[in-house]
Image (cartoon, rainbow, N blue to C red; front, side, top):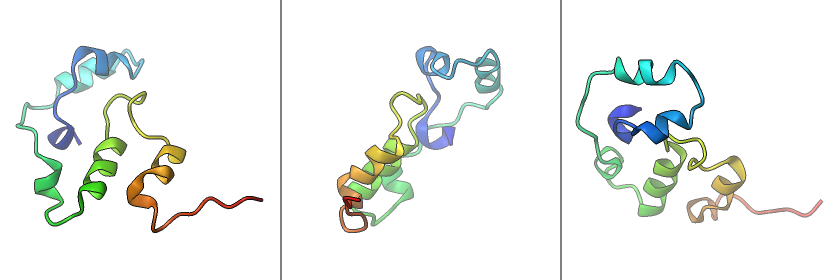
Amino acid sequence: MLEVTGMPNKDEVASLRSKYAQTMVDSVPLRPRKEMKDIMKGAPPEAIDIVENLMAFDPGRRLDVNQALQHKYMAPFYQVRQL
C-alpha cells in the first residue's frame, strides 16, 4: 500500500492512534511512490479518484462506505432507494 500512497507524514501516522504505527512505518523500506494512473492504465479518471480516496493513509481522509457509494464513479452501479 505504501508503494502507492507514499510514505505517510507524522500527522498521518498519528491519525492511526497506535503506539506501534510509527515503528511499523519506519520498518518499511523507502520506495518511490507509484502514481495510481500508471497502475490503473486506461481506467477512467473517476475510477482512479475513488481508489486514491479509498486508500488514503489517514482514516479521517479516507472515504467511508456512504461517501464511496455517492462518488461519481459509482453512479452507474448504485442508486439510493427509499424504504
